Length: 392
Ligand code: FNR
Image (tube, rainbow, N blue to C red; front, side, top):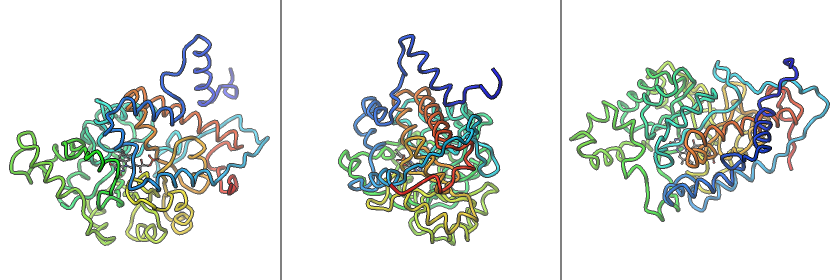
């Protein structure tokens, strides 16, 4: 078979599944994200499922995130020779197989016993960068070891203690993480009705605190080591986790701590995006935290065009909140995002089947992305421009 006739990644994935089907075997995990979510629900405790699937207040922002995608429609273009397709893109100087990263999702031990290590292995295998949360269940160093040379970034929750923040950033830098993604929308924990109803917050059970427990600066703040007195450590964590008094001027402190690029996650207004660029940030993530912070917030996709108009020519703009399928990625990129972060879908895969579940979600998602690209009449993401969308 010549290069030209070699089936693309998307076609290969389809073929593999259909050929196995001809021998009587069905896909191991549900293909539709909605069915996969249901499978995850069955695998999880009611508290863990609620923590994963739920959002702030009446979950109006979560609904708005999805509705915003439906209001944009793709206009496929035909007869454009899309036999050769390339879904790769360059982000911050690094070539990625697709405009895709894995969003930081904390406390993965409540989803699967292998937690972040399962996600790390699958993302490393496919070369899709994993953004590790500060509140992870495995340490910065453990995840780095599981990933080898594969690309990874570190998501920072900026603590009330500057010394601790500096220590976390240094650890990430030393462990080979390629960027710091600082989340700005979590200066306070939101009112999440499902979690309040369950009276359940994983951190209070000591879950998701591996990076604190293992940090020399954090340990020095405690009367006794966390292994001996976990309650004191949990209380200390709760006191210093976030800092609602920070302002744009404080970003300089972070910049002084590291040579790594710094990206700001949680931006929803063009003015804030401009503040970020003026403060020297290397990138912006337009996101409303998957509707987990402000109920009634603007849909992240609706915030994207305004942010791009203001800072799109000056900085790298990424996107998350509501990405479920290849067409969602296509729409966000057509509007101008350089890449998107996949959130809950891979976590549903983790809950349903550990590393294998995550791998399947990613392979299916990549196949969908690549087929959508070609069927829309594009050979690469550089051809995915706003004129491929109309308001529906
Ligand atoms: C998150 N998200 C998140 N973000 C972050 O910066 N640090 C974190 O530790 C977490 N933790 C977390 C846990 C859970 C259970 C969820 C669902 C989400 C937000 C995440 O990075 C991303 O912004 C959203 O998941 C995007 O929304 P969708 O597409 O998953 O709905």
